[in-house]
Image 1 (cartoon, rainbow, N blue to C red):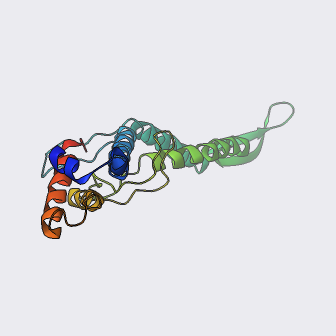
Image 2 (cartoon, rainbow, N blue to C red):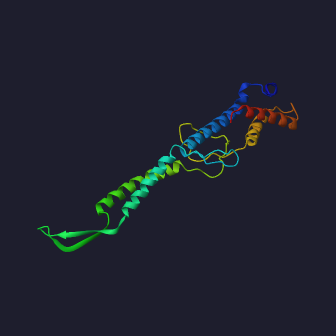
Image 3 (cartoon, rainbow, N blue to C red):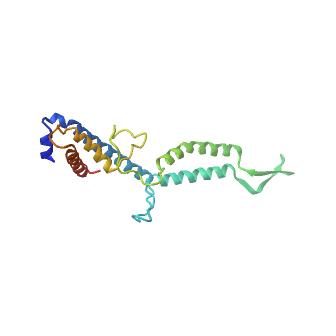
Length: 207
């Protein structure tokens, strides 16, 4: 690989596009893998009963989501709670004697129900955020992605385009092939040699 590039390149400056592409491939896939680990930490991993036979991993935030969902459910039940049978209150006069008039209570006091409703509404945004953070897409996520602008400090807004190892090899091969000087080697031979170098470079990167 070194001997081939030394024959094709006359100046280190000519290698800058190839090195820049390799850097983009490494950084894009490293950041993609790091955010994937962060997502698995929060959302967990589903059970795999077939291939790896791994148990389900609930994740760090799923127990909190379950707890919040339980509290919201309890508040909704209290808001719509009805006593069965209703509570019967007997009216007393000023001398504390029964007036024979009664009041039947089947629900909680309106002020208490309003307080429960306020608490429920306050928990709804928390529930939505937890549900978004613990969402797990169906199917396997791509392990490799195409190179692109990345940032290790900013959460990606969308999933980067997936890529197969063969696609990355071809992308790097085409960039290396641009270094091939005319008439130094046959086009087909140069293409095979560039593909061999690209394959070795991709294999040497921990993707």
